[in-house]
Image (spheres, rainbow, N blue to C red):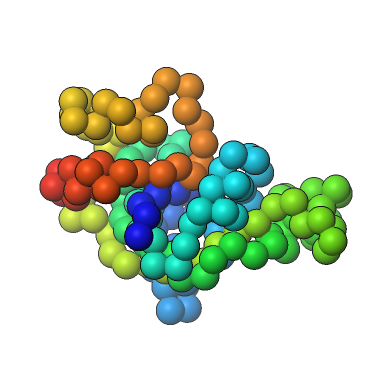
Length: 152
């Protein structure tokens, strides 16, 4: 099993939105960065655990846990001209963009803010905390996963 962190803006789609979906499951669409796409397409596997991270908000941080319940498949929003994620270069033969399905597991006992993550010296190598890292999907090591859960 692998561990991941997936960012979403809570005003657009937060942990409570995922929880409220039918069976707590939703596709993770709209990834338009090739590095993040490649991780999702090539490395995310069914059963992998995910930190659900609230970004671009007053207090960014880890809000909950989800798991991958369906491995990558073409992101249909890329081929929909009505979608904000439309990509005219995407096609059925060359989908370009992919998504996975995630399922709500639980909210954390409290939001673990980015500022607190940065203060923990044991997390200094975490990809999320590296300067200039703006990826919406990133791997989390097993040690980082355990350390963060201990911060709850």
